[in-house]
Amino acid sequence: MANLRQGLDMAERKNLTDANVAELEKRAKKYEVWDAKLPHLCVRVEVSGKKTFYFVYSIGGRTRWLRIGPAAMRAAEARTEAKKLIGDVARGGDPQAERMARRGGLTFEQLHTRYVEEWAKKRNKSWRQPDNLIRTRVLPRWAKLRASEIRRVDVRLLIGSIAKPILANQVKAAISAVFSFAVKHDLVVLNPCKGVDDNPTNSRDRVLSDTEVPLFWAGCDQVDPVKAAALRVVLLTGQRPGEVCCMRREHIKDNWWQLPGEPQPELLWPGTKNKQGHRVWLSAKVRELIGNETEGLVFANERGNPIDDLDVAMRAISELMGLEPAVTPHDLRRTMGSTITGRAHGREAMDRILNHRKKSVTDVYDRHDYARADKLIMEDVAGALMRLVEGREQDNVIALARGS
Image (cartoon, rainbow, N blue to C red):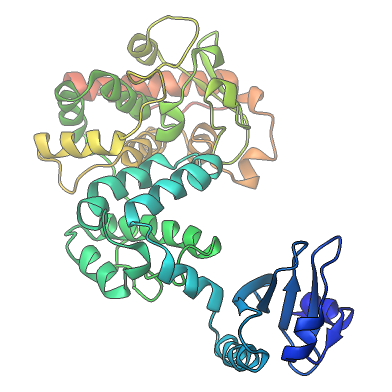
């Protein structure tokens, strides 16, 4: 509250009595006169001459102006109310936010819409996945509930109704993000997710086994063909699902997919996760999957935007093909990385191709020095995976040295 105190020290002060308040005259600009006896209580005089008592305080470095009432109320009444509010703030309260929450009629659905439009779309390039979780798992139960009335017990009941621990944790995180936005913008007082523990989970290391790869590939024929092609490309390139969804033909040069590190909004390209430019050789099978057009999104929905909900398509494939535990799009990326090391190309090659941000890999060498080796590795790994898909016998594993 240091800035507020400095401001009060320089402010105009009077002992606010009914008589003194009545004598305050209007000026060319609105102004405040502060009570000489009680900090944080003032009367504001508008250009029109209207007078209003305010309680002024600070929360988290932000100054709040809370209207107490018109000057028609007695000054002693305003001082009594200000003393009560000082106590509320001292106990950790935020009177202005609490008043707004009581008055506010935002439903959770309306709050979620504001969060997506005002915050998530502008700052989180992966906003679609939590948005889908909210729409499918939360809105059916909470859409019409007042956001300010949702309590910790409501969060526990909703999360407890989701059988899969990891999914339940993801839903809770999506809800918490919405409420964190609401608290920051004074739309609600508290985030009801605070104090609700995550479900214990094991570190995920799911990869497709040799027998599951052909099941996954066959299952892709049962879902949306554009999403199926994107999932297959995730498996064969090992790139992040969100980046594959936004793949641009303008970024493909001589069969190399060149991923700009920084966003390109005009092309709906979000940039890479680690903000580093990257290049990936597209094997013959990948080139067959994406076709040979020269511009536009490789995987677009009906509205011409990048596809999303790959996780939904992957869950459908898992259920159709009996893949247990269910496979996620990221598990496909992990499977490709595991195949790289499994075919004796080494962990460094895996980190390099998957664009892992490791100083020993990304900051020490020029990626273009590895172009020929990476090309051979990508063709070798894609060939090995396709032999599993087609039920053909695997060849011997041969390590590829740099520059070979």
